[in-house]
Amino acid sequence: MEVFMNILVFAKVVPKVSDCKIDRETNNLIRDGVKSIINPPDLAAIYTACELKKKHGGKVVVASMGPDFIKGELEVAYSMGADEIYIISSMAVRGSDTLATSYVLSTTAKHLGEFDLVLTGTQTLDGDTGQVGPQLAEKLGLNSLTYAESVEVKGDEVIAKRRINGGLQEESVKMPALVSTLRKNINPKKSEEVTKEVKILTEKDIDFDLDKMGMKGSRTVVGSVFAPPEVQKGLIIEKNSDEEKVEEIIKILKDNKRI
Image (cartoon, rainbow, N blue to C red):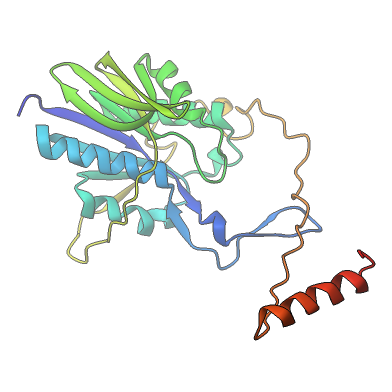
């Protein structure tokens, strides 16, 4: 083993947006009955951290911002090899934009200790901004690499193959550093043998400035939210022969005055 590292991963639990529908009157997502999952690029960050731990030794800490009931989704990180999981849970974080979120996460990172490597996903399924990783690196004063498809550590350097403009670019920076990872095709299963506790942190545990979090600390103004126009689905013609299919197509075109 070359090094012994402390790795912190920030992960977000999000709705499985492919299962979400849109209320056409309010333009809000209908989340009732929609499954929550660890954001796929964040799950890749957890996987990357645990693989680095296997190779180099060290400790993997996972932290997430959200309500305490997301611990069920986060527990899979223990099965993957994480050593500690924390949820920053507080009503004060509600409505946080990326600026407020990066403040909360950077303050949490400082509370949890010193880390050689911080990993995040590149972007989330629900927000899709790609801003939190770079903002977090700035607030923590860390070197950063984004859009990482793979991550290696050699000595005091972290090396990433970055997916950019359809190609790969290899870059390295000195640790401590922050790397944002792209999603991977992984599907980990939660082990029934995991007995470790997911710990809850609030403003009682961490010295947050409440004016920098939630809606108070947010600087993003959403002008409007609207659903994309509904696209009419194609018509499937089921006939026994090609001739019958052609006749049906011609009939439909005539009925709609297309021919």
